[in-house]
Amino acid sequence: MNGKIIIFGDICPDNNYRKIFDKGSCALSENILAEIKKAEYVVANLECPATNETNPIVKCGPNLRAKPGDLQVLSKAGINVLSLANNHILDYGVDAVSDTLKACHDNGFFVFGAGKNQSEAEKPLIIEISGKKVGFISFAEEEFNIAGQTTPGSALFDPYYSFDKITALKKDVDIVVVLYHGGIEHYVYPTPLLQKKCRKMVEVGADLVLCQHSHCIGTIETYHEKTILYGQGNSVFGYREGNEKWNEGLLVELDAFSSNITFKLMKATPEGIVFADTKDEDARIDLMRKQSEILDDVTAIKDSWTTFVEENKALYYSMLLGKNRVFNKMNRILKNKLIDIIYRKMKQMITMNILRCDAHREVLITMLEEKVYGK
Image (tube, rainbow, N blue to C red; front, side, top):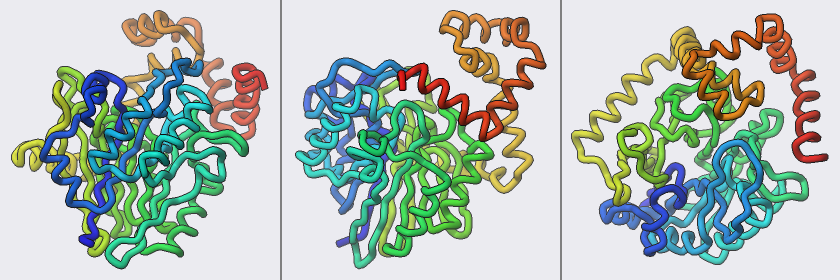
């Protein structure tokens, strides 16, 4: 046993790699497949249900789906561990989650991060390799995806319980790996809150924290001699012409024996995923580390976040008020002038207060859930 564990980021056969999967290929190049064969465990986040269900749930954002047969394709490629904690696992309803769990079982995958109920979804996965026990645990932020006490779905990150689960896991294993599906899409830095969460994960026992979901390579820091990667980027999520951030991702390699962590740069092409050449890989990792130099500077992180929010406020104000796509687009073109007309400062102050106060926010969420779900 060589102790090598490979961890992919987000994988979804939907998007424009559908035809490749239908031909029995997982869209990974021969070089990547050869690298997989060197590892004993190969982990990935399957960011969609694998089901024949065709009726999507009503939600904000896209509904993603894989076919049950896609899991056989991934298994043949050498992937043998799947995290299902993400914001799309319930996109086709509770039966689709059950279909996914069955397809994973039928194809021999180890699974964590989702389950037939909350208790099952929260269970970590423990593997033994090179005389070491490695524990995997994953969480997702809440959208339309979370398991209930009696209903299937994803494991929720809940600060009142999740940190304790990491602590408990650390008592049983030598290495704890946390996959956190959250943060802001297409933003390379952690938000101030995300950085607090991930650092706390390390403080309570995590040895490696990998943030997924952002669809771009983010920044990296060593905290208390442990590693936090704020954005792994895409692994197999289709190709977008001219979108370099979308088309790249990091393959993470963990040596369980030495705890050494290395990265390999992957790039999406119209034909599939390939390793970048050495020159491009060195340049991209150097850029990541250069961008990461501000992570110890609280003011710099806050300033970066404030700039991002300012650039996106026209969209977020519109979404906050539940406006449609036409209004959202016009408001962005007009640089938030439509919202400024109808949403004055006093109204914004009231909204701010009921959103940032835990008690008021809980009332709002309960009200909206009853309206949306008819509870």
